[in-house]
Length: 226
Image 1: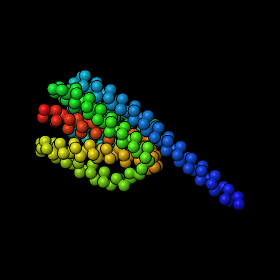
Image 2: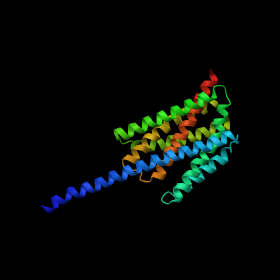
Image 3: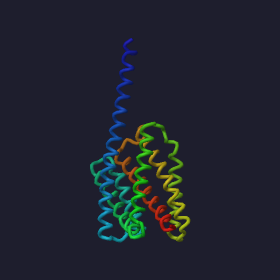
Image 4: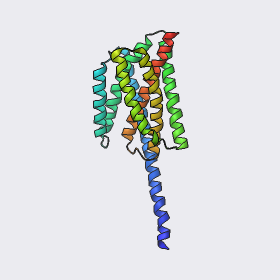
C-alpha cells in the first residue's frame, strides 16, 4: 500500500517541477527578449541619427553568424547574455540604415510605423494563441527549417541578380515563415523542447527582426506603387 501512496506524490512533484521550470523559461525569455528589443531599437535609432552606412551583405552575414555561433557556445554561461546583447545590438545597427532609407521616402514614417504595428500585432497574437491553447506545433520544425533555407538562398539570388519580383516573393514568404517560427518556438518552450532562455530569446528576436524587415519591404513597395 505504501507504494501506491508514494507514486502519486512522486508524479505530482515531478510535474510541478516541470511546470515551474517551463514557467521560469517563459518568464526569463520574455524578460530578456524585451530588453534586447529595446537595446536593438536604441542602436538602430543611433544608427539612423548618425546616418551610419550599412555594413554590407558580407559583413552583415559574417557578423550575424559569428555572433550567433558565439551565443550558442556560451548559452549556458553568464557570457551568453553578453553575446546576446552583442548579437541583437549588431542587428539593430544594421537595421538603422534600412529604416533611414524608408524614412527618407514619401510617407516613409507611416510605412515604418505600420511595419512596427504589424510586427507587434502578429507577434503578440501568435504568442498569445500558443500560450493560451498550449497546442503542440513541433510538427512545423522540419518545414520551417527547409523553408527558411530556401527563402534565404532565394533572397541572396534576388540581391545578386537584382530581381525585384523575387525579392518581394521572398519577403512575403518570410512573413509566413517567421509567423510559423513564433508559433513553433513558443510551443517549444511550453512543452519543454527548449529549456535555455538565451537560445529561446535569440530565436524569437530573429523571427521578430525578419518579420519587421519583410513587412517594411512589402509596405514600402505598396507605398511606392501609390
